[in-house]
Length: 116
Image (tube, rainbow, N blue to C red):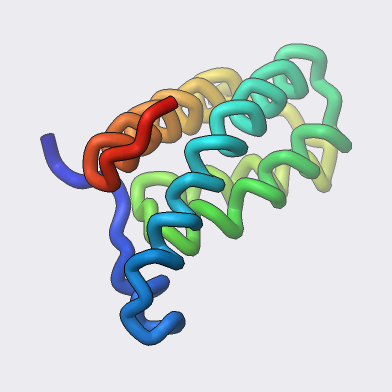
């Protein structure tokens, strides 16, 4: 399977510190699935403030790990939450984010030999 994330940016900004990258991967694994679940709840309830909050919060981790498949969609969700606007693709977009986050978590656990 194609790698969904890239650690080049973190390595460049942190002088090749692989232990730092591993600790960031651990934080990603710990927090992103929960945030993704909250994003799904917010979209189901049309809770725009929470949708914005979680999309905005997730954006930093998505950018840090260069998850290019989510770069545009997380910003789209962030804007929708801020503007309180619904769309035909809202549920689909949120589910896509969840699927990619879950796949990234699996890859990070495998690549960094991390347990649950």
